[in-house]
Length: 102
Image (cartoon, rainbow, N blue to C red):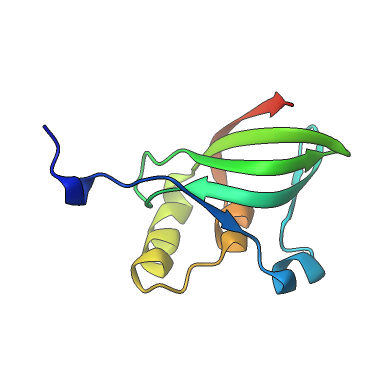
């Protein structure tokens, strides 16, 4: 049985207006341009699966991804110090991702 402090409930986080204004909510993927509306995650651990809701080439999508090992530590530090922006996660290098068209 897990102790409650080890369990992170997933929360939906909006990109700030500044992130949207400066296009920090956009990421170029092999399939085209992803424009994020929200990111869903509970904590930041090496195996955390992040979910971005948004659009890919104008079509609504849900993109699940995990961070690359080389970018994980920087994201974890920002999360720990409570200075993490959603764009930090979106624009980091990803280990893998999966696109679901809605």
